[in-house]
Length: 214
Image (cartoon, rainbow, N blue to C red):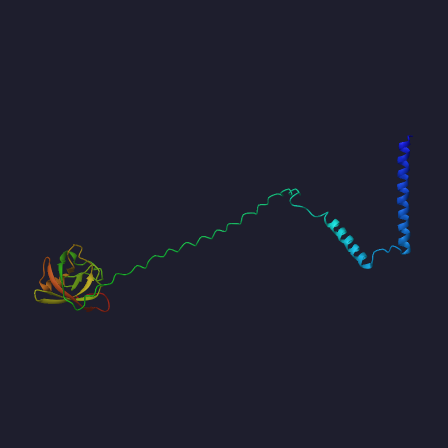
C-alpha cells in the first residue's frame, strides 16, 4: 500500500469518527434537555403536514390526468329498437242508404178552368174492364187520364154544354191529348173525333170507384 492511499484512509477514518462523536453528543444533549425538541404546536403542525402528505400520496395513486392517460376503449354501440308504428283502424264503411223516393205531388186543379185537347173511345171497348173497376158501357160517364186519382170528379164544357164525369180509366196513349172521354160523356157533349174542351175539378167521388151508369 502506498503512502497516498494510507493518507486517504486515515482522513476518511478521522471524518467518520468526528461524525459519530457529533451524533452521540447531540443525542446526549437532547436527552438531557440541553437541546430541546419541537414544541407541541410545532409537533401538531408537523403531524398535520405528515397526514396531508400521506393523504395526497394515497389519492394521487387514483388520480388520472386526461392529458396523459390513454382514452378508454369504446364499448359496443347499442341501437335502441325502433318505436312500433301504430296504424289507425280503418273507418267502418258507411252504410249505403237509398234516398227516399218522393211521390210526385199530384197537381191541384180544383176550381180553375183549364183547356185540354181530348179524344174519345167507344163501341169497340164496350164490355172491357176499366182500370178503376167496372165494365165500360155505352152510357158510362167516365174519362180516362194517365195519372189523375180515380174517383176525381170533373166538370167538362164543350160548345156551351156541360157534364160531370168521373176519372175511372187510364189513357190516352197518344201524345198531345189530356183526356179520353168515355162513350156516355161524348154522347152528352155531342163530341166526336179530337178537339178542345174546358174542364175543372169539382170534388171526389166517395165509396167504391164505380162511375154512375145511365
